[in-house]
Image (cartoon, rainbow, N blue to C red; front, top):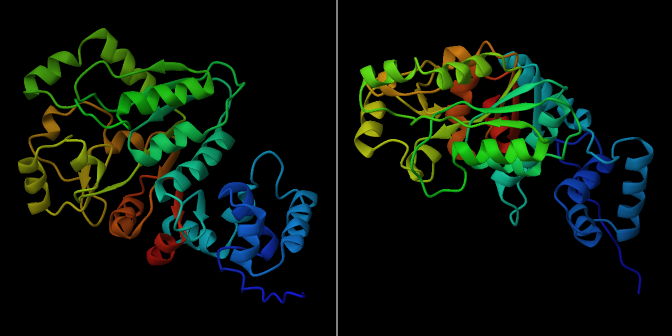
Length: 318
């Protein structure tokens, strides 16, 4: 029985069908049969595409990020928002979790940035943890991974301490967790605590960072800042009334990317939004329709130098 195949049009986020097939197989980890169904070709064609991808150097041990970062949409985002680099992952495959897919892509970008003696600052959240868990083990020497926001009580897995510890373990790096609460009971207590040597050294290390990786949060029931209990409901309402649309590193921003301040910020311990701009490589990871506006605001605020997002979010940002 002869089967006829009708190949689908290559999605605009890919330069050609070979790159498309390679991404589905190596990054999304679909079987060759599933790749064939997705593209509309035979399994034999998929085998040939994957072979060509290897011969062209598109795929080796790691996926060649340049092939994706140089797509029209990635370049357009870089030009519009002044980014140094941008990786746009293809449209979401229903059976795969978007946070995990973004994390895997971010891990590859982060790994390509690393050099011996680097200090890497780490925030927290689902995508940050996914990146930490997906990054390959490193043989680079004298790496340090440092937590940039204070600690808080939460039952979620993606806490600041855990994200920092996982990344440090994967990279065989020195781990510096933040030995202080994220929010203190008073401004005076915060000022006194910041005089302690352990926190003085923590902030010195953060300021010496060459790289920081962070997520971008919306303000909804599923968002990190809400689901973790990082802020009380009354505090969130106060920020919303002042025009907050989302959060970076626990700091609230408006639609133009400007930080919104309340008395809570006077009691909060951690790197500030102005301070992260002094870090040379700033990798932001976020995607999904609920985050379009806050990602746009983050880009307007010039906080990231590099962005990892998904195709739907990227098109909405242009």
